[in-house]
Length: 201
Ligand SMILES: [Zn+2]
Image (cartoon, rainbow, N blue to C red; front, side, top):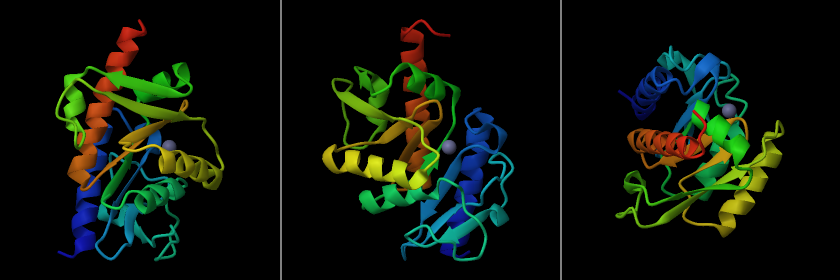
């Protein structure tokens, strides 16, 4: 099995898992993993993430340009921005979950996650006694403009484990697809807790 085939198999599996958890409805969301040579394996535009096959995963270069003539996800520019900013990033996952979508409509600047045991799911955090700020960016159909805005924010704020896009969903990443999936599940649990705290069910 080539490295591409290994990463593609992991992304197919991640898509099934996210779909089973209701986080990538109606062909939404996109998933990627970086290969050792810097190329990026990413979902083809418009595919259903719960029913992916290896043929639904394609390769783009480090700038997000298609390497096989097919069209990658419309949000490839956001994946590329994260890989260029986070040196040890090996995978990026983008779910459109209900809790992330709602919470990012209630909080327009950031969500402060504090005193949660599950914060220990993130790298370098070994106690609940801390605060993780998750920025909320306004949604924008101009992905290049949104990527620039996010990159500016990330250049001044570290560490960051993920971010929300208002009324849209969230992005998170990790050194491997497994790591990134753990971060998706941790964020989704914490976003659900924050929604319940606000009395929204
Ligand atoms: Zn999206």
